Amino acid sequence: MTYAVRSRDGVVARFQTKREASAFVRTAASPTNWLAQVGTTTVTEGGVIFRTDRPVTFRFVHNNEPAPKIVGDPFKQSVEPAGFFCLHVAGDATPPRGWTSGMMHFNRPLVLARDYDGNIYGPTGWKTRLSIASGGKKKKALSSWLLRQGYDGVVTVSGGETSEIVALHPQASIR
View 1 (cartoon, rainbow, N blue to C red):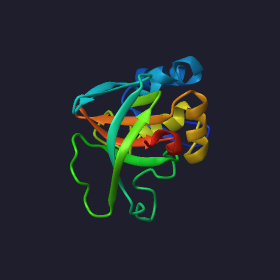
View 2 (view 1 turned 180 degrees about the horizontal axis):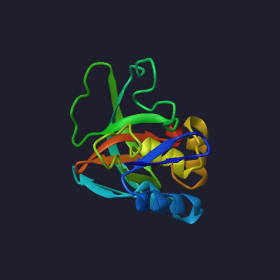
View 3 (view 1 turned 45 degrees about the horizontal axis):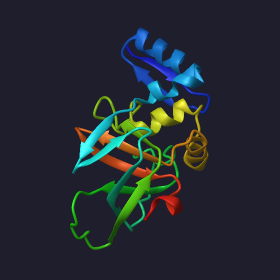
View 4 (view 1 turned 90 degrees about the horizontal axis):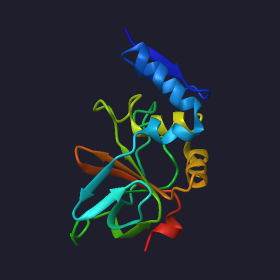
């Protein structure tokens, strides 16, 4: 049996036990505990330390091709925060054709576990967790909410490595 929790905006998270679902609801109801709800983490990659609330400067690559438009929403693009999506790269490797590279700086990043069950686009994925923690905000509204919380970027981590990175205010972050 699974237990479902639905946010005001219709985002559903599923839990294996009633206890987990209840704990999630209690945390979501407390605005001071939203960070505990989304699951912050720390990782060191290529000599760069990514930690929530700690300034970081890193080299990035960005795919200039827009994300494909696919029927449905298999990548949770309807929920993800608006911003400049990129990846961290260590060293000075030349980016592949169609990609750009540069330096990025976050004064106050939010560093999150990408997912808890291997399903990045499921109920434990970072996009869904952020949307639920913000009261169901999505896209630009979610980015604005994160900026009001003081965060200028989101760094996701999986398997001890960075994954998707979003600059919420790219004009101020790209060096």
